[in-house]
Image (cartoon, rainbow, N blue to C red; front, side, top):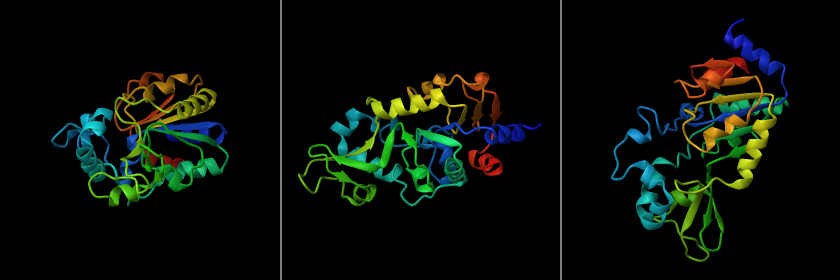
Length: 239
């Protein structure tokens, strides 16, 4: 039996699948991977992306933060790819219980997924730092320099987890519980090097761990099935 046939069998026989995804799930939609050879971390800017996307930089150099953020992080014209659509289909079939994602692009929801734990937040949620009024991503994109609240005039901040900030407790708890209770865990498009998110897959105690990633990961030795290929192409074949 081939690996693809094994994966099909695993999916066919389970109604308790959890999907854990990283940047590689969205690269096929045209969103760059932060750590790939041609990803954002290898491009040249006045400051390293790790510094720009930090809490202290947002507070102390907000104009420069937003110049980078609006240019590189707000890809509002991208669409869900085959992977997003396949996962939404799995959920509709009653097989997929949750998507846990490190991405902030909202493409899983746009594809139709309902239960999505966004570990690092979403570009589509933005709040005034003073009165907490909500603003969508287009308000941020269309603002001049620093987006300010139209109610109280304070700075608006994206609901994304910056470096030096903690993950949101309820999101973490929901993700951990889903992974802990899963029959099948499919991990895809992630190097599994970004913590604390990457450490969450250690809560999985089952024997159907599937890894899909272009490169090797630190967790390969724990996997029951490994695919070094495109997430969308593989899921498109299987689902």
